[in-house]
Amino acid sequence: MKLKIILASALTVIAAPYSLASNPAVAYTEAPKFDSSFNESMYRQGITPYKAEYGRNLIEENPTSPDQFADVITSLAKQGRSPIIVLGFTYGPALEEVAPQFPDTHFAIIDAVVDLPNVQSIVFKEHEGSFVVGALAAMKAKGDKVGFVGGMDLPFIRRFGCGYAQGAQYVNKDIQVYLSMAATDFSGFSNPEKGNELASEMITQGVEVIFAAAGGTGNGVYEAAANHSNVFAIGVDSNQNFLHTGTMLTSMVKNVGVAAYGVLQDAENGVWEPGVKELGLADNGVDWILDIFNRGLVSKADEKQINKIRKDIISGKIKVADYLANNQCPVTFIEG
Image (tube, rainbow, N blue to C red; front, top):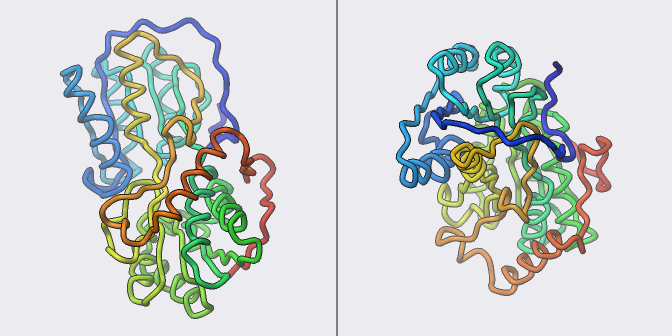
């Protein structure tokens, strides 16, 4: 089987429900469990409410390196754990290797697609959430320049940037969207110094709001924005509004915890199925965040307009082009 990372559309699965005696486990990414990002989101939104409701003896694993992923999954499967949830697209190769060895074990991977008969894959419509925060960026910018920093030049990352650019141009047809990628390999997701450098370059060119989809590299982007007055940043994946109060305009979140809870609940109810689920604004899979940390940055008028845009995407009135459909974006970037 060939690993397929982030398909453009969901696969409809027609299959008889599995009857499970839920004995679950989760494996976080190699980052710390309380990372203010994916891991912590899964724990707080998914694992904590699941334990409170069902009281199961759920096992949590937090490997420190991707080199450990296959061994961790194998160990959990040998213990009879099922379903086993793994978090992040970097688990894809390990799951593709291990899952066929345990055909009676049910696996779920969040944020990637592994096409195997005993794997459920959950992905997100990042372009929808990115459109919303792009619109807010254009509302906040006094001029006509906003920016996007990606961790690695992947179609998956360009999906974020393309959605962001469409949202910005929906509000301001004359806006220019600057785009930079931190690296050509996965090091681009863990290099805050590079993020700071790229963001600083954009700021010198007049960019006022920068959205980062770059993992730990994004921390450097946020720091660069915080060091300049009237420059704002947008967080990604989890709520990062608290990181630099007065700088973080909002965050485009992927509710991985909601996705994990859904897997666990389906297992409890005996309706777990393999295949692909794609979660967007309508499914509470992606969204923008307004809270006490950024309330002062978003006017009531802008909030009202953003929520209307959000509703129009859900209803289909606004069509957001998906970069993954044909590896093309209807917006032209200024690439650095």
